[in-house]
Length: 240
Image (cartoon, rainbow, N blue to C red; front, side):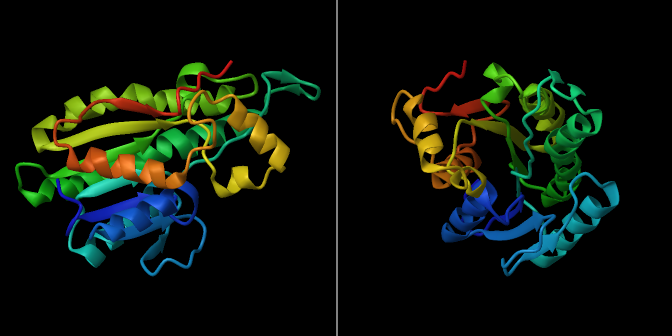
């Protein structure tokens, strides 16, 4: 599928990986509607809670009406916490664990299940493409990452079943598993902490640029034979 003249929704598109993806897609000639819980400056921004069935349904419907349909769904909405299973204050907070899974995993599925209904209406040899955001934490999560790693492992684990489910509708599904990227959240850390994180990355020894995530998402959209795959984007980093 060509990005030019395509119609995309990007969750979590008000900042970080989502904002970079929305910007790059537009540069390639795509129409983009950003779905984000936070209000944003984006001209085509729809406020939405991806964990809510009603909120997501209303947002996807509005996006489809704005663009005249949906061809692409990129799910970047996500949250992260750091908490050990047993810490100084006792066991891991269950509500915190649940929240991470609800936003990262259930939220992604919630939006894509609705977007695919719109894609199926396109009636083409290729009706749509889904790109979800996993993480290398899905494969080598560190201590304190039980909730985040579980949510991202869920993203990775549902990639192939989704691709198989949606094959009959001519819709492809892939996921990107990014390593350590220079998102606004990470940029807020002290420089020495950022440098320490970058030093662990074999090559190139730097934080990932959100634009690199965006360009990979674009390649997935345009490469018609990519389906059912989780692609690591991490400079060969393997976390310990």
